[in-house]
Image 1 (cartoon, rainbow, N blue to C red):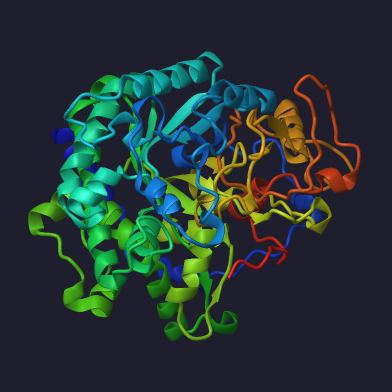
Image 2 (cartoon, rainbow, N blue to C red; image 1 turned 90 degrees about the vertical axis):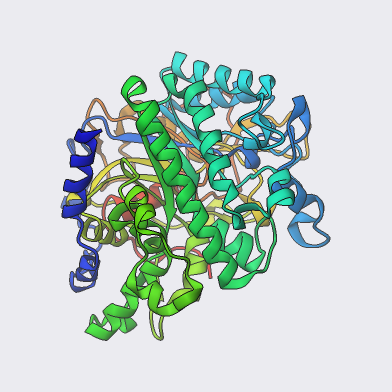
Length: 541
């Protein structure tokens, strides 16, 4: 309406495209000092801690109860070599059948938010949301949402996390075809109508950059097409328009009654100038590198409905264009900024940097760039975390240093650590473990066993702060009483795990090496909430 249009105009006026360049002129913070430990009031009341899973990675039940095939089902089933050859996600963590165990795992840790995705091909096997839905799928997601709310765990729901119905790939060529824009709009409308009264935070899609580049450009992800930059640019264009249509559908038809918020999860790497020299030329290369990933999607959605000038210069006529009318309805179609920051983006960052630049896992600096570039939006770190090889043991980890102060004024309202349970890690298959809970995929019962990281996190939730012991002398303190804890699906995980039964009462892990590194998601709290961490991360590129 008129009021919302006014708000959109005001928001647009506060954006300052190009201001992100100033972040490279600002000094990096020094490593943590003794007096900079976490203290009461470090995080604002109501800060949303969370965690989550994606449907394809954990649900399994790939053809159960009328579910249709997804492009990832087809991609994994047709692989002839590598991790995917014999490691399809047909069962994965079996969360479709064992969702109650997932909720119990959430209860065990004591969290209060959970991020998960809906499976489009499970809800609509033929991909057409204008037809009749799969009633078994609707029942499943309703039960999950209701149980979460009964346990006072807030659902954060993603509409589409990469598992496009295979039939839409076969009939239309997938996201290369703009027919999918309208099909996605109808799917979003169904989900808002069916589940929206119980959901307050929606995410339309997860990291479309990886869909466009790895799915249709390089072929590393499903559907495995190698169309190069031309295909990636077309796919990205359609994904942006599909997101915008879904946002407008919610804004027009559901927002007033449901009072929720809608955004899109965008991914990015971070890059520093050659040898840390912030000369104008070096800064410009850094700016272009971030614009080539994050700005590709964020500029149209958060600024003016159009691509960054650097992309227009680079791709010329190859880059699709938004009509003036499209620019008007694409811009400002997110109620908050949802960010994905992890190893997949850092790897791809190596392909879009200039001479001498360095890709670094510095979430703090990236958040500062977002603040300057997009007018200090409210930010949800919707996927933060790391992973390690399945054979890496806990003794291979080193200390995490935590910083005081709150994100230099960046309006971060939540953090989703990945992951709740071990699952199928895309093109890595089961060679990577990222869960708080160990799942033995060789056993049919897929028992969830809390790792030492889950135990440590549980203690933090119980204490509403960091326990005082020899490994956390400088990070003890308490969070505000209203601090919200949760878990998601994508953390750095060590894998020489120690199992604990659900009934066991523990107040602290017995050995420093057992808990010296609480899940990776504290790794990213380091970056996000303050400050650089010493360069101890595993090599990811």
